[in-house]
Image 1 (tube, rainbow, N blue to C red):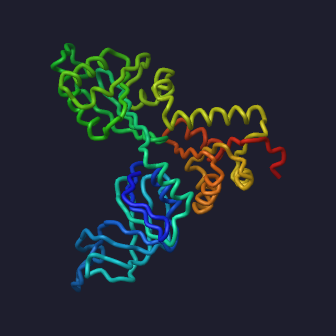
Image 2 (cartoon, one colour):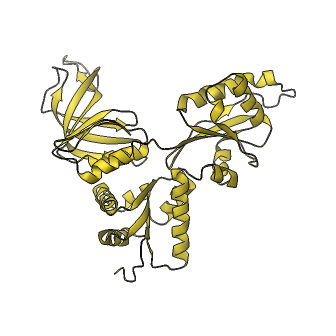
Length: 355
């Protein structure tokens, strides 16, 4: 999270979300009645008699909206805010009319409220350190898959084809355009300190890394080769995430921490431990006691409870210094949390009676 300005009272936060967990944090901080200012596009409808109602000029404007409804996209890609316009940079837009803002990663905004609570300031400041990012490449002679891990979220991109299937003779020159296309795609999602893991069943992965080095690409210094993975493309990326070498390399990542906590929690369930809670009802109860050490939550939880209930639950856990791992079904760990209802908590001490 990039923070340009932060003031407690009156509450002002000028921020730019950098990943999906930043959006979660903003969803917890923005409340009805707050003023949100951001750039957006608004359709100015043509007033001609026979003009279509869905047609008009799209203009760039800066709006300030008094929030009356807010929701988080379950794929953690955007926050949708609607409310009454109180300020606008365009005179053709009427104050008092209603508008919706879609806040996405990289979309700067200003939050204005009566007061930003201490725990909310803490949440924002904790997110000033950008989540560790990993790019995983699974490559062979036919294709290459690209996956980007930010925090606990995995984004898979379309496979890049070499176009060389069936060709009998393949040389370094033959692979050049394939490698160049792959480099171009990597750079489009690369940022400073992003770690790149290259895997795959053949020696093409080494040829690719050598090609990167010979071209003096900025990404070369952050590339590591991982052997022992026999698949390429999107399937190879999913297999790579289960490989011991990849797990070791990513052991300090947020995803690794969430995976370890989830594995621990599932083991606790199998032992019928009293230091575990894994229904919404039980997690709410232990949260009130301040008993939660770590909680893993996936988007599955939204099928059971209203979004505002989830926000209030997370706020309660945070106030008692519980660690929150937010997951989705893009990873194996997220799917595990989905399978047990979308929430599971490790407790600081045993609770013998949940009723």
